[in-house]
Length: 112
Image (cartoon, rainbow, N blue to C red; front, top):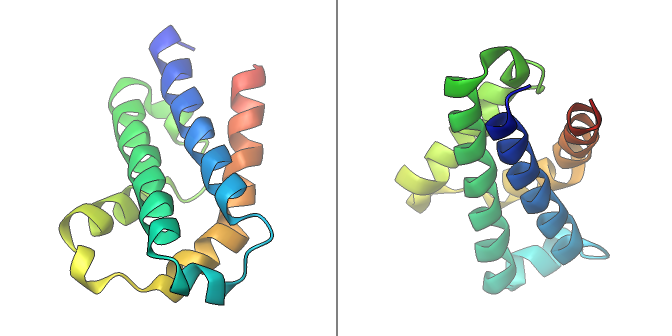
C-alpha cells in the first residue's frame, strides 16, 4: 500500500474515533438537541468522505475494500452541498450501525 494511502486511512480512522468518542453514551435525543454534537459529527463525516475520495483516486483497490464507500462519499457530498436537507435520524443511524463496521475495516487495512 502506498504511504499516502495509509495516511488517508489514518485520517478516516481518526475521524471515526472522534465521532465515536463524542457520541458514546448518547441517545438520538441528545444528538437532536445538541447542535455542537451534530456539527462536530458532520464535520468528521466530511473528513472521512474527503479522505476516501482522495484514496479512491490514488489507490482504487484499497478504497474498494471499504464497505459502501460510494455511500460514504455521497454522505460527504450531501453534507457539503445539500446541508439544508440533512436528515439527523439517518445520520444517527449511520453513527450507530455503520460506523463500527468502518472502524473495523480501517483497523484491518492499517494492520496490513
